[in-house]
Image 1: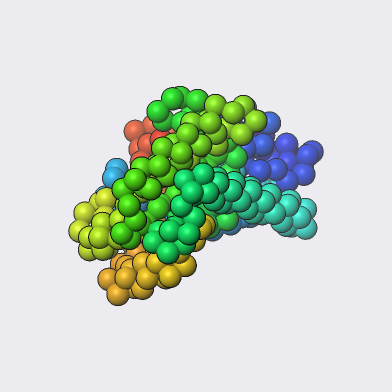
Image 2 (image 1 turned 90 degrees about the vertical axis):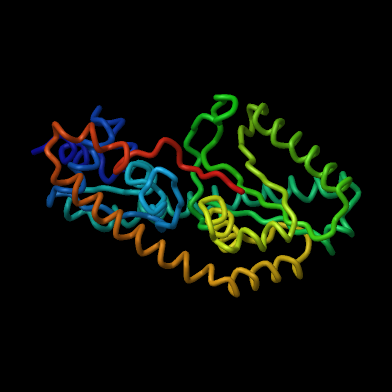
Length: 299
């Protein structure tokens, strides 16, 4: 009886992270044993979604990464423990949805407060919109501590990706919004009770139209974010217009092709990792299993 099976028969089903902590195995070895064994059953919670990555040929990969999916979104149990596995997976799914909802509510609270503090709410309702994207909109946000790139400070999981699009809004109002939102970002990072990261960009509609040409990596990322993004505050009319522009530019169809490429890449990577001689794993894990950070730039 292997070590993981023995642990699971004693404890009942566990998440990938709990298996790593209980067994003392590294995450790759634990993933491979849980995936390859016919004595174990896995249930993956949530969904895989497109992420664009400069390091990947063709840019398209799935998120969560294989490692993140195993640690945070996978329940494993001994064969025959289906009912217990299903129960734990359901609880895990509820927890992930709750984290996503709380992060979205925090983002809405912050951006609405920023607009009011600029004394520009009526103009924002007409000439700007605030959009949230990333893990949160897929109900796949996590709260696993990770370092924030610019400071090295640990933050609580998924960041808050926010895009502000304005049409003919005065530079003074945009500058005010930018300054106040940056203060919110700084305060969230320093507040030990919160430790959340905001990643945001402010741009005009003309920039959006240019990015929807999908002509380079930055434009592809920006287009994906606009396609997946949800309205937080501001003009519903402008938000709907952006969505129409994206459809007219064929962005959903282009992203669907990239999703199929990401799906093929994930299946190929998993198959390769399960059959790769262990002595060669270290050379190939970086691209196939781990990701340096489960976030993306926004433009």
